Length: 103
Figure 1 (cartoon, rainbow, N blue to C red):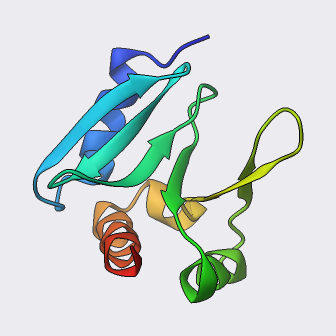
Figure 2: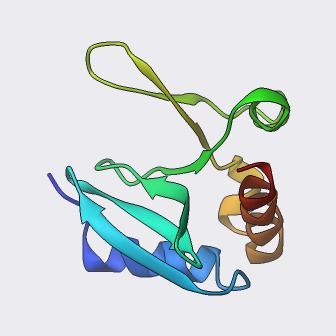
């Protein structure tokens, strides 16, 4: 199942305060970019993930975020957007900016 246009629009709303947003649909989900740099993905099941490794990934884990895993169990460097940020665009933008700064 692939993500809907409404789900993609929701991600734009969540990260509204981050400039230069664009997206590309891929593998049932979508990748999100700011000024051409990928910083987030939307999985086919509608979850938002931020690109993260090292200390930034540790910060996300401390907030209860979980790592994106492929069906074969392989992990990727993407972690769920903390739940508190899903309904708080200011907090979501802060996490998004932190993801971009950590790239």
